[in-house]
Length: 211
Ligand SMILES: [Ca+2]
Figure 1: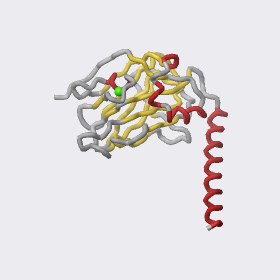
Figure 2: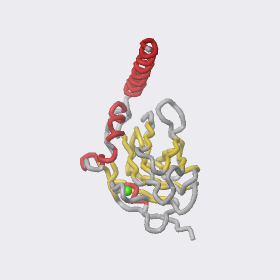
Figure 3: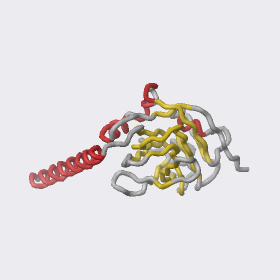
């Protein structure tokens, strides 16, 4: 029997006011972000369904040893109520370890936002593409999606759309700002990535010439 979870716990989620440039540094420190109480914000979380014993709050308890698992395949969702509107700059998700023979099983999702908790809108990543991704059980690092940060939402929903695994999340984090992210931050990030790409190509070219 499918149990409909309407569990609204109150837990802390990291919501950090950071510019886009510092999101990258957040990627490596994701798993320690929950250890920074000053940056945490109280939020609520609910799920479309929950496997017995794996409450949605386990996705934001700061513990990689606990998880939320949907009670069935997609479509499923996890919805966070941030209690106020924020310009979300990135979302990070860490799926299960893949133990029990599920390593490599896929979880497809997209991120949606809402300000009334009823009507959800697709969110768009930096670059303008739909904010969607595929996670793999047992993947060694979190999956990050970085947003333009130009639209504020109170509700952020992980909308699980497909995959070979029942959707699951060991840890979920949301980063954002109470005020709009300045456009130059996006430009600076783009230029930074372009500079890295140019340097990489230049190194490869040099290596080939030297061979
Ligand atoms: Ca957890």
